[in-house]
Length: 333
Image 1 (cartoon, rainbow, N blue to C red):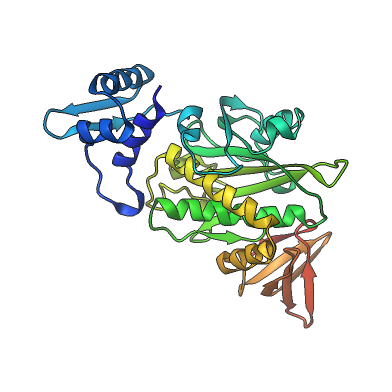
Image 2: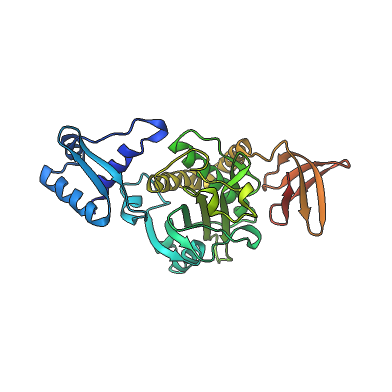
């Protein structure tokens, strides 16, 4: 497939931030991509064989009516404006967990796996924080993981969780007007309902650098019936929030945004900038919540996030206490 053609048609059908959709002139598209009319027609035929439904208007040009439901690695990676994240893209129909798949690739070493992004249409054992499962019907979400070799430090997981959450939120906003925020420590929320989550995993490594996997789940097109009744009131999707998206274009934007924040985390002063940006998006700040640490539940007002991404509460009974993300979790807010 010529992914440049399919992407041009996708962008015309799904213009960013409310732009006007419409057909693409054959002459302008051929000229922009430096294709002869014959080669463009062949590329369109190739796309049709893959399941793309493309209408040809004699006066107006080409218009994408429908695209296949699955990801194509060629499209996600095509001329992507990144330095590191997304330089390699792999897609699969189903896997137990994209994080597990990413770790398999990480075993080949930094030379082959650094910056690799893997996407799956379905996960049979997707996992979230504290052993929770991530549920998703095929073709309805973005389920992906990225492998990075990063400087090792005790605070690395918290830093990358913040950075990835910021990147996901920015990628969503790139697609259209929506109020998306971060619920401490690793959830993305729209109107206090979970729309996505981050799971960062690191393993011991020799030397200064070691592999880290950043897993991301983002609900895109589900309706409320897609979620079990017991969690239905607390979850949502971009579609339910009124933002219809093309998952391929969103995945591309996500990799660009992840590439930006990955570079930021290792730049001088970058970690502080990530902390500032995550705090600005954090919907937990200023709330009265209950937090469980061990067997004890505490309540109070969230007054800050510490540099290691711990939650700082002014306790209802008086005093201020810090709750690390690794050992505490919010039970009510």
